[in-house]
Amino acid sequence: MHADSLTFIFLNAAIVNNFVLALFLGICPFLGVSAKLKTAVSMGFATTLVMLISSICAYAINNLLVAYDLEFLRLISYIAVIASAVQLVEMSMKKFSPALFRALGIFLPLITTNCAILGLALFQTAKEYNFVQSVSYALGAGAGFILALVLMAGLREKLELAEVPSISQGAALSLMLAGILSLAFMGFAGLGAH
Figure 1 (cartoon, rainbow, N blue to C red):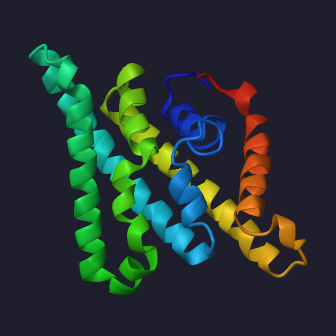
Figure 2 (figure 1 turned 45 degrees about the vertical axis):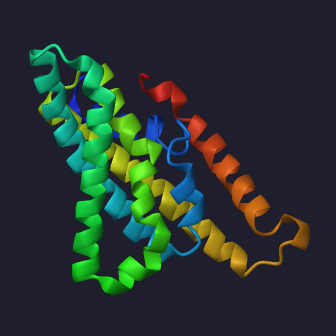
């Protein structure tokens, strides 16, 4: 598979260089919203939508900044786009799914500070992806984010039914699970390019 193919870019972002489990970006929502499978899936899709919107806008903004030799405004521009995209998703969710809006609570506006989304915009710019490659990269990163949240939520829900020593319950158990999942994903490191 060629490194510039859309399938390779998608799989590389989703599995090999998973933003959460390989690059350790977006850890706050990963640990905060992965207690229940339903909220984890919803947060994953909301983050994926923000990633897609941010990626498209970042591609357009980067071309504009390069055309006018204003690359030094890239970071602040990306942050403004991400904050706007999160507001759009938050308002849409509040209007069309108030129960989900309440379930995600404080973690929904915190997508703005999710470093995985800013990392996505910066990485695609550094890799000089074209528009279609950027969209594939954003969808792969979003799919990887959903995968990480679903895996963690499934494990945490199963462990609620198990007898776990009290000393390792709560945050300690969540961090140990995250470390084991990360180790498992490190096994894919040899399959792709960085």
